[in-house]
Length: 246
Ligand code: SAH
Image 1 (cartoon, protein in one colour):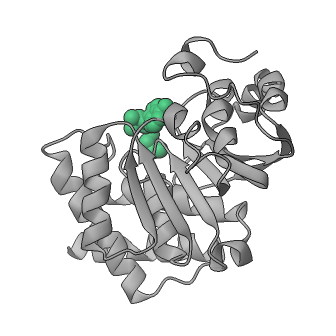
Image 2 (cartoon, rainbow, N blue to C red; image 1 turned 90 degrees about the vertical axis):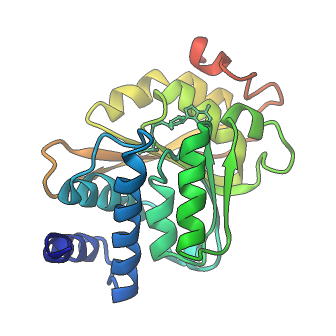
């Protein structure tokens, strides 16, 4: 506990750099997330990262860095956001903690991870949050979810040509997707150019992000939805990954 308290300053300064002032309630919520993550991780393999400092930077601050791309006013006005392949809740959960007005959907294909995120949402008494066990390829075809979101986002889920087939169908016209990527973001986007056009997207920008304690530059890839996604996409589960659009 002492150790966690000491390193809170890392979270506070990191968040400041993104224009966020964290309150004691925020810090408590992040601490609860951390403790539950470590506790559940002893039973289920949710994440390879369990050290407090690493979780702060690689999970919490890396998730919050999405705020460099997401317009704050839109979020505060109750934007609809879906985090696809959220795993143990990243990046969607930290974003929801600091932007409580967001209508957040967290989608995950693995049961135990869904159970964890549901547990956290209950424990923190979060509202306007929907945790769904399912696959992007299914939700993208379901009228309840297709073209319903202002933003669809993902971290560490798939290579760009595959990822755009998961994300673009979820977004309304005029909305956008946000992919958190590593150093080869530009090359990945280049390889996905045809897929992006096919699915109704247009690359808006790549925003470089430097995180404390992380040597590599990270990128936020923002792609606008400028045309409706053709009805045949997304293809059925497994197909986007097996035969990425080219
Ligand atoms: N976004 C989290 C987890 C990354 S691991 C993080 O950055 O920490 C990738 C996760 O995506 C896994 O939990 C996997 O189950 C999920 N996933 C992969 N393909 C998916 C799909 N088609 N639909 C829903 N979830 C998917």
